[in-house]
Image 1 (cartoon, rainbow over the protein chains, first blue to last red):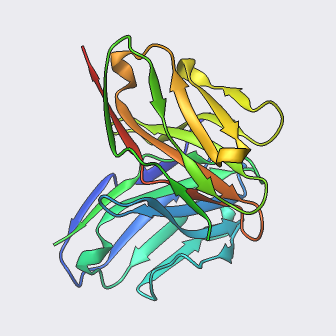
Image 2: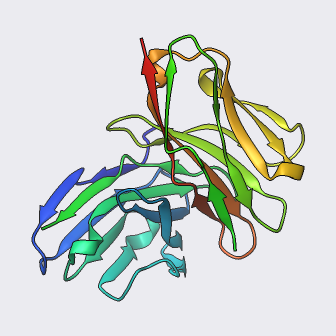
Length: 112
Length: 114
């Protein structure tokens, strides 16, 4: 069984540019989560999808962040325009309901 | 407010020594608790989880954790550490009211001396 995959593994962009991160969850997992870890801090929740619907986006930092989940399969997280404080590692996770979450390897985003 | 505290940012142990990583949580309801490990270049891998029942939980790679409600703790232990255990370890609590999501501690980075 394939795990959660994320693309790209690393991204270096300049302030003001746009970046799109992609996550492919485990097949059959309706729940998809995005988390972020800023250097030296804890991993923080960003948002939660159930199938294609956003259930909770309370952790999204501001309206420069836009997440979508096409047809309830893969998800994208777009940052536009990127700021320096957006640097960090973005994790995607998927799960069945009320059970362990399976995490991808993360995308390391550096904004210069 | 819900929170998870991992008081040790870095821990160094010798190979073969015992290990205990501390985790304290603050959560009003019965917590769902997890320990994850992240090795370099890898995603977070689940070591073990506690939902209910026996408070001593066995996990993969020889790890165990004990849930102590009176102390709001869920410490991770291993009797004999191997060099391959060097990694970063995360304790998390899942919120079960509202969105089911994780609240993480800041992580403990483990270094193993040969």
